[in-house]
Image (tube, rainbow, N blue to C red; front, side, top):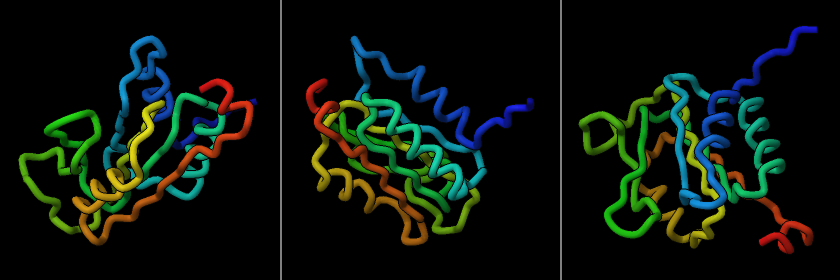
Length: 140
């Protein structure tokens, strides 16, 4: 039987490898390198967050060029910008998806929404939040 590789295999492998329970980084990101995630890929990420209690939130931003978070203070990105030398997004549609993972850190939603303001208007933002049940809260 042939097992097909999932659309998000490389991203999920990267995020799992990047997390260390004894010295957790607050967040991590991955660019799909000019491949826009489909609905199936976003569903794979939703399934992934259910299986990984150390991931709080996943943010998928499509239609933007290769992106990276920027920060000047603290550990929450204050804004996002292109990974190129340009300071601002060009506003064109790009066949790329930027996946931003927040691990165990509990950020204020207002801070996350403020950072979203740096994306251009044409960006498609999907915000996947972990829903905790009683047994998950006992582990926290």
